[in-house]
Length: 120
Image (cartoon, rainbow, N blue to C red; front, side):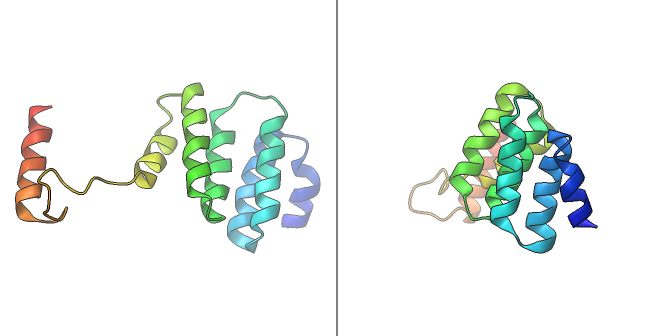
């Protein structure tokens, strides 16, 4: 079924992009999935989903930093793209905590963080 979809996927950049993610996930063919997503993006259609799909294949390929960069580019097109916002939030490194020397999970850091969020 995927081989038939590969043959037909080139007709639409969006379909090719989703197919690239699927191939990366289902078949573990990361390089092929990346190539499909990148080709779809080069067609010139401006669609934030193309960037999301490329970022997902980059994550699967261990290219975390490139994925963050790709997500930022996609968010310039659609700053309110929910899936990309959630994905970039999960990829961002978290602070050590607000109280230096204590771990993020320390109760004091937890308390200070909650108070800070209430203030904002």
